[in-house]
Amino acid sequence: MQLNEDRLNRIIAEELTKSEVSSMIKSRLSSELSSNEFKKKIKELSSEVVSELFKVLWQRNSLWKNSVTR
Image (cartoon, rainbow, N blue to C red; front, side):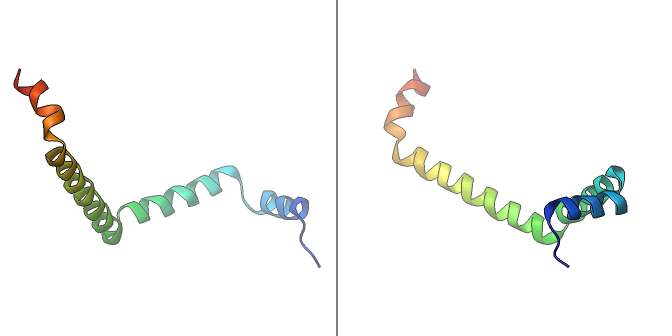
């Protein structure tokens, strides 16, 4: 028995209501967002972004330094 898109949609509609699907998605997202691994990756990424920003600002300080000191 092959599942085409219409049949699959019918099965999903029969088995799950919109609120059930919504609650499943919300619970999955909240568990992912609160995980330590996710928090660690966010800290790592933000650290890299800030570091890169300071590097660029330092390399191009002649462009912005004059306008700040006026």
